[in-house]
Amino acid sequence: MKIGILKTDAVRPEWVPEFGEYPDMFQRLLSAEDPSLEFRVWDVEAGEFPEGPDEADVYLITGSKSSVYEDKDWIRRLEQLVRDLLTEERKVAGICFGHQLIAQALGGRVQKSEKGWGVGCHRYDITDPELTDDQGKQLQLLVSHQDQVMAAPEGATVTVRSDFCPMAGLKLGDKVMTFQAHPEFVPGYSEEIMSYRYDQIGADRVAEGRDSLQQMSHQGDRVARWLLDFFRG
Image 1 (tube, rainbow, N blue to C red):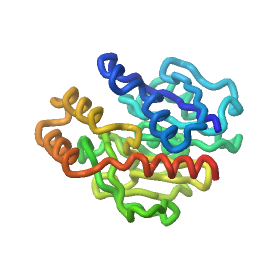
Image 2: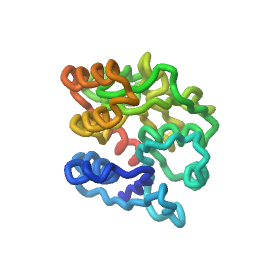
Image 3: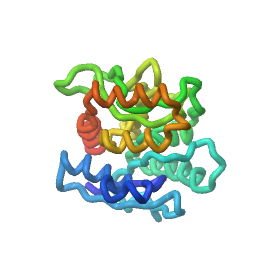
């Protein structure tokens, strides 16, 4: 299976040696579950787009510091690409910005949350009975966002939720699966983001985020398995 990664942001250069770029993070996460996977990356933020849906078997949209409601040409093009891929019966997954962009492209609404920044590790309730494994009905994942999906596209089902983020996971039929949190992150990268954005996030919220890294274990591997089951289904 070839996964097309639609890259929507760049990692800060000083962090790349330790953590890699965002596509590298996804390749590590998913290849740990299936070493036979193939990948192709398009830097859509830089204007690189697939020439057609057949360039990959399935597609995944990464996170970004951009907001989906910003007036940027590449964001509008990416929204249209999502609609085109679904018309062509391709499966599309999205993480963080990707989660929000897919929702917006299909008629949902995204805005900056009054609850402020979500950082560190958050705990979610799994509300979709099809997201099953032997680790219970709660999920712990690293997060970094202040935008949220406020209204889901028509026909979408909420798969993962919390009081902080009621629409933290969505699916639409068997063609769309998205998550607000970051299964591809590692705790060290979460700490770097909190330190870098300390003034934006605020001292109290950063302290909460750092405490959460000590108190909870990131479960990105669970999401990796669900994504691969979705892609193959």
